[in-house]
Length: 144
Image 1: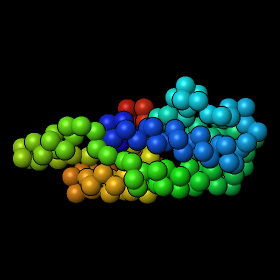
Image 2: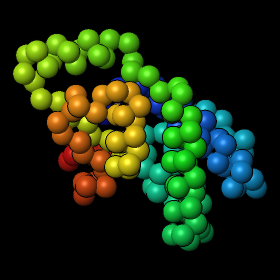
Image 3: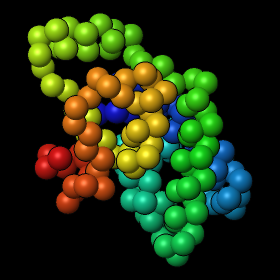
């Protein structure tokens, strides 16, 4: 997994949702987005899945625009604040010494997955990358 396992990116995703909802959906009943609302309705879900549930009358184009804004805001925040969780690099060093191949399965889109690994300095550490768009069912389904 990426968010909450490799880094505390969930906090940055929350902040991105809060900012984007305030800017693009000022009249949405969830504004201002609280952490508990985010955890219950957005955290751990694909952006499209969360947004189509929260904004059922939206068009595909509106959802795509909001997803783009969320990814842009997350990227802005992550550039200066995304860090590996304590102990992660040591664990990856040990796994590498033992010859264990590592992979990441995530609900993040491929561009966000690549960007996040780059920000964390972990791109070469993972031999297998599986964004949920490549799976029939997103996490938490056991298929990926």
